[in-house]
Length: 413
Image (tube, rainbow, N blue to C red):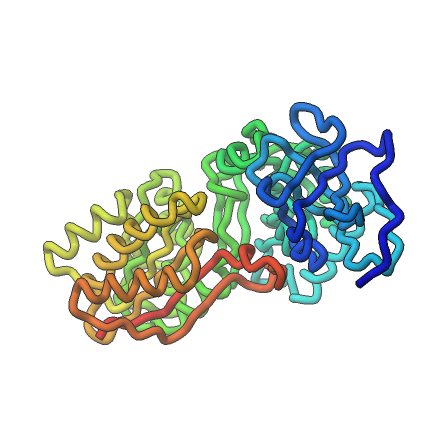
């Protein structure tokens, strides 16, 4: 047992979050999130929207520092962890921590060969995975697209903007708070330029494929860089095939497959701006044989199955369907409906790449859903490969919640 911590709460120390008995171990190990159920008491006045805090265990030992948000689903996002009572703990200011960790994240991207001649769209900061809770930075060429997913990052957005530009060399910095983040953190929905003006036309390159992006109509940070390696992998097994790309957004999977030699590509998305961009991106890359359909994917599949249409390769990459554990059961039903239809439209011997970006859906739950979907068709599901997010989307070993992306390359027999 470590020695008793002498750093007790003192009058005027600000906000102190005291943990319940027996709840501190994950945070000594480095877990970044503290939910309200682990909190015994909050000492001091955090104000209506929260404040920086220190966190102590039931004995008064300082566990670390972070930000307490009384409005957040995550009560405390820990920024610094003490690790052991055998060491003195001197908390650093937010600005110093932000600067050091931004530079460390940038150095890791350089080590991953990002950016590179064929790819200038990637994730520079992946929130907790880069020890910066609530901060996401995607590089879109010379533009940094920043998501402020926590109250602290939102409150410090002026400093965040300056340091992101300084570290990355971005010429423009775009700031956003999504509707989901707003609900989770009690932060206003935001979409604004921190530095520079929003480009009227922005072109980026991924895997040697060019994409013209309309950021006024963009989803999330503007581009789903987490599927970069999976797009290339699926393209490698799609040469000569007839491919159906469901939830295509601006064309990622379909364009990669067409470039790799797919015989035909049909892309489907319910977003008109997305399908407009997908068509434009096919032309931008001089790719032919692509059909782009602006409609709901489930509706399209139902009509295709009724006609008896089939494809050799199908990719199914829907948006996040579960925003919390309360939505898991409903989300699994939606996944089952989509995947059962997709399996029905798959040629014998074909391959289906089916994905989930919902972190609340576990791999076991998703595989069970696939098994049951196959059973409805009296078929067995073969899993050939399991893919996830690339190295520029790191996670913490102590917080598996961060590994949200699941992609299964399967066959139906």
